[in-house]
Image 1 (cartoon, rainbow, N blue to C red):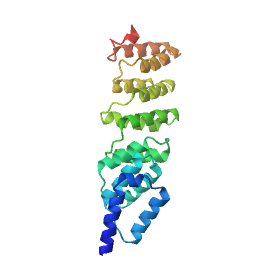
Image 2 (cartoon, rainbow, N blue to C red):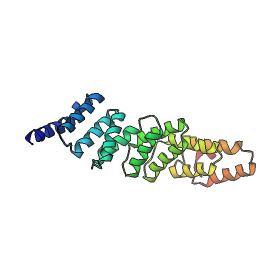
Image 3 (cartoon, rainbow, N blue to C red):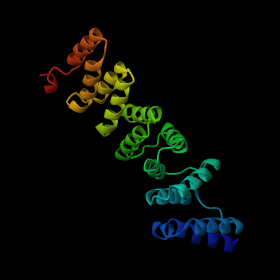
Image 4 (cartoon, rainbow, N blue to C red):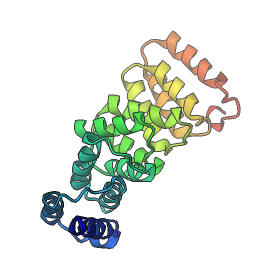
Length: 220
């Protein structure tokens, strides 16, 4: 019993030291966890949280994902800061179905990635033509009351216009409160003036002028 308690304290201390954790490679980390398990050392929830945060902040997301799976399977209670770091770390990864599902799950549970990182991630999603995923990510930012980088909004506005979804473009623009952003308006104006439906184009232009943009220099 004394040996287990001693090893437990030793393990907790080593793992919760960020500096020592970051120099471990994946084989060493896995070996350490296996040995702790063999010695019947039960790691605290907070220790796994420290591992999740440290690995996420250091860019070792594959290792962080494995730790996240352990935390989820065992239904551990982890500090929000650790999950927020994990969510922000996921935003630095190449967009994929797996990353998107992990982010969506974390967001649904109330964890918040860094807005700048999520904005960059949305922009990359748009560049990779993952429009539905980008739309979901952007709606998360807006619903939470955050102000994202307007470049990710412009990419979606351009997509809506090119696919004939002008109403969605205007709705998104107004929701983003980018009334002074001539870049987003330029995408909408370009679509309307190139449309074969001249009557519809005129109606759209009139709508744009009255959408709280009477003072927008773009129209003068």
